[in-house]
Image (tube, rainbow, N blue to C red; front, top):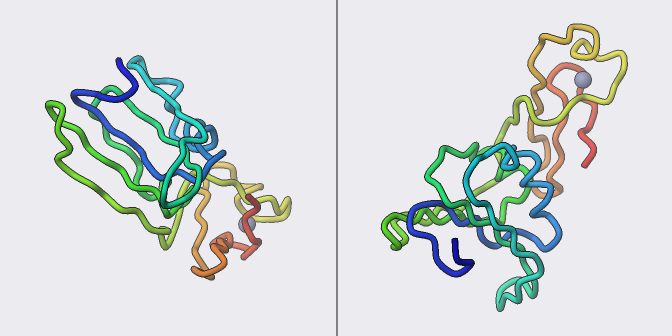
Length: 139
Ligand code: ZN
């Protein structure tokens, strides 16, 4: 794959500089068998510096997870070398199965099969709290 163009795939753009690896890990991109390119500290007029991830394959991404990691991200879907969709993300109201509650007395620490659910409680400050015990999620 060339860095500049992919024929069919996904370009995750406007990632806050330094966050590409976090997103890469959370989305499990290391498990894909296709080419994945991570561009770090790309100069951007809008952000100063940004990271970009290019995935050389069509795939379903977890939009909530991406929005959680960085709500300023734009995702471009590329088909036959053309951008067919540009998707802006936002912070999801709830996030499931991505972060774990740190409270050792939380029901989810005891009952391991319970889903880890966090609710957005402050959109401006990007604060998420455990649905069960209201412990704040750490970043
Ligand atoms: Zn909890």
